[in-house]
Image (cartoon, rainbow, N blue to C red; front, top):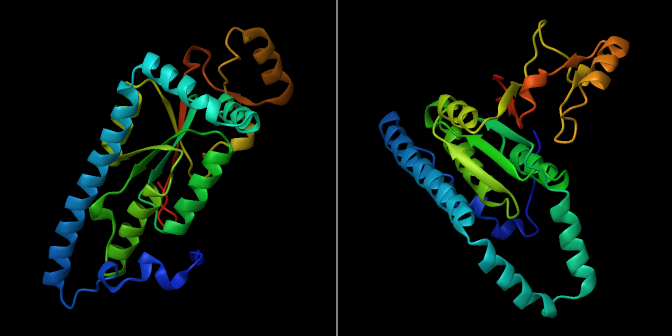
Length: 233
């Protein structure tokens, strides 16, 4: 197992005694679990409030603020910002279901950011993390979520809630799973926002390459579900 150390491990909050509590008995552990469930709910509400605040911002106010600040930013920086924003996509997002290792989450979020993925969903169910070590594990997940400065994250109370919300928002949902009936991800022709109306070309590609084309009437944004590292989906 890999662990990513901070620049100054001595001051890394993940090593604080207060954040790495080990209960002396099952009764204390049960109390800690309940406290963690409350914190999970608070984290969910905080992320949702932040998301809603961005959604409510008036476009005219944003434009005025941008015009006000622009003279203080050099041209190269502005070009860089515009380049990054133009490559952001709303067409694809990922859902992480009860991941085990916080380091994996940090790494994935950095990768999402570099590929222009703006929206990421998480499910951190208190009941899915068992044992004394799981308390620190789950706390690490909350820390990882808070470290994603440039991404828009949502935490859901359960997998069922996450799926229901995403479907209501019009997303096609695909789960990564290792079993004999799974389709190799390399054999799928993923739709793109610009591919609408190219049905004839798509059909030809299917005949030539025997690829699995997603339904033509479902050229909607997609969400890919990544399961737990140990137990999968």
